Length: 271
Ligand SMILES: [Fe+2]
Image (cartoon, protein in one colour):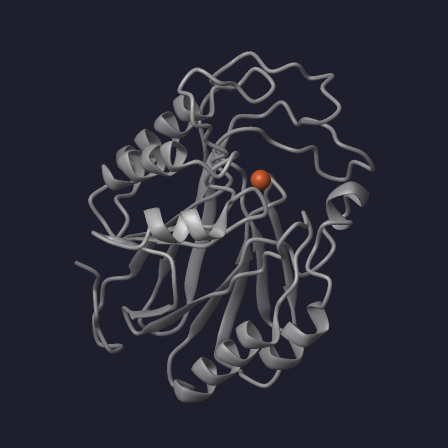
């Protein structure tokens, strides 16, 4: 059950952002030496051991191969937390399959959410046949309308692709290609507190006009910040926690495993 306070609930709403799980159909398939099922299992264990969330946001690339078996694995592992899970697609997902598999019994793959005196808005930034991101007119209109309807609620905006450059040439070639259309809307609605994404497999934290811009490590493989070309960062995977306070403030941070749960080839130049 999600908290549904209207601003008087003294308890913060706790969110765990899980992203870029890159699960394969076959349980023993590894991504550059890392078994992503095993790694996700450990990160979910970390979530459970540290801060039991009120809800989970799973921000894309949930499957590496778009298979029903991969989504079943994500459901089983995230479902073990016993809280609602809000899913959005990434460039490795197969959108129809994701929606078919992840939109019932506590899992949601569409729309928005109002809880704990906040509004959470989920955008589809994928473009069929492309690794890069794009926000279609319909997504932008939905965002503008939801923000206009609830100006009294502080808001978080979630998507898969980064809407700003993170400083890695190869990753920034796959960013949202129409970010100004997004920021034109954000700039019209003062209640937006943060824009949060996955895709870049690294922590990123910046501010723009008082809005936090946040990216989150993958639950598996990490990409080296600032790298011109594909490069692995040999640090453990993790997730982002957020605590949304009824007064419109929030706190957030990254938690990582103690070690990398696998044997990654640090010289890998792509996948
Ligand atoms: Fe990814």
